[in-house]
Length: 325
Length: 269
Image (cartoon, each protein chain N blue to C red):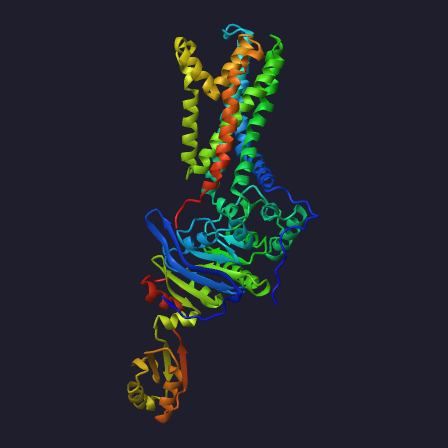
């Protein structure tokens, strides 16, 4: 495991240390340590069966932990009622009572969190309006999948949680629906200061919205940090395309091949003047390459650089290809 | 700038007990969906046909008026409690299957309150069956003049047996990981409880038969109905037949609430 963050633990809303979950003889979560702060979106990634859902269920007091400790908003897992009062959860396979309306569904859950009927109604109305369901008086049975997910997210926010756990919240949604859900959870983190734990297979989403990520594989954390840190920890090189004048091809080739930063180099014969470059390392090589060319008297017409993607780091760390978006 | 609202309601506002919030919600779901009304419709049809056959043409009915009332009351108890058992057997395992249990388990509501709320809601199935059965029983019992006894038997013995079986179904539902298993186990247990009624007459009247009938809440309740309505025995002599229904209702309800601590989600990782 490569933990590459050094942070102040003062504002940590979630902190798990050596968390272990067993199902009989099967260890689903093996000494997992993670943390997340208020207002942070933390991505928990991993292939199917890696143990992500078990981590969430352990942290939400749904399954007992076999070892380790965790605190949510200052409540230890042993204080189950305290933890549950501080969290909102949208499970992966969340079901909905088909005969209820969105409003009565939210009001019901609000009352379960100790709100008075009037307060639950007021908060349900505000959330429904915020999630674009304010005028809907139909039964949930008539809702589309996107509407149900928005309703589920609104339900998870009914108690204004300190920590919000979302397990595959965009699964099965169209691009507009995905975008809407991501906007809502970003808003929750930014405006309410909610700590969001996002479990998803869609790495594009993670790269866009997550402040920090952890990758799980076979019940353990194999990398943790910001997306850039995790990619760097995975040792994935970047790509570059340098465009030079056709007359400079040979000189550029000689200059770049002499550099240890250039891992591989090939000419693109379909686009005269382009050199496709695979960099050997990720740290600071862009400037080195550029300086090398300038020192050799070559003025590049363009230099497009693309850092390695999280999906490549994911593949390198787990050996399992992941959907990019 | 981040803002989190404060929880929960201030003391001046009335906060409904969570067991009642859950009970109310379950009752609404039971009776707004087709489940509760469908089961009640089936119960009503069966009772109507039986009442008609028991009270109609003497040529097709070999029972006297009191026996007819006894049969209808016993059938109402049997079917009504079966309906309550079926509803309660679905209460938790059904939520597990429909994916609605996890959202309930992550609220700060105590597990005991969840089970208590569901128990109360499932009991309304019996209450509705009782309300439907009363007109049939009163009309039939009017002739032989046992209407008050018939209503009392339904209200007392029927309600106790229904409470016991509702709690039994809920306890099984809390442990069963699928709805099918919950229903199968609950109905098997009901068949087991109904077995003493199938004892040959000699054995049923023997010491072992009497103990078996009295110890079993279902057969005890049905025997009480027969004693009061058909054999015209006094209520004062019937207390031995109330012991097991009362005991089973109390013990099984306590068991269902106690099992709430083992309320698990099940499913995959």
